[in-house]
Image (cartoon, rainbow, N blue to C red; front, side, top):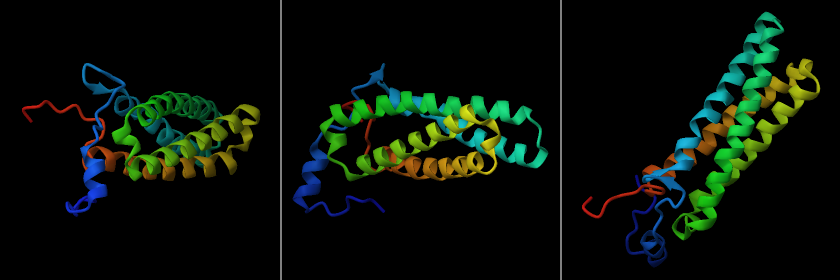
Length: 166
C-alpha cells in the first residue's frame, strides 16, 4: 500500500512533482545508497563480536569489537555526510517526511555508534554490559533507519536516476 494513494490531494501532488533524483552520484549511482552497506555490516558484526566475547571471555573479541565499532562509526559518518548533502541539496528529498524520519534515525544511530566506539577506546572492559547494550541499540536503530531509507527508495523513488524512456 503506497503512502501517496490519494492522488486528489494537492499537497501530495506538489511533493510528487518535485525532482528527487540524486545530486551526489557517480555515473547515475547515488553515493549515499552505495555507502551505507559497510556501516550496516559493521554494526551487526560488532553485536556478534560482543556476544562472542560474552560467551567466551576471550580478549581477542575485545580487539575485534574495537575495530568493528570504529569502522561502523567512521564509515557511518561518511555515509551520513553524503546523506545530509542529499537532504539539503535536493528539494524533492527535503519535502518528504520519510526523509526527515530517516535522517533523525540515522543521526541517532551514528551517535550511538560513536558512543560504542568511544566506550571501547576509553575502557575496553566496559564492553559488558555497556558495549553490548549499545551494540543492541545500534542494531535496532539500523533497522529503523533502514526501514525509512528503503521506504524512500521503493515508495518514493528518491535517489533513483530514471531515464526519460522509462
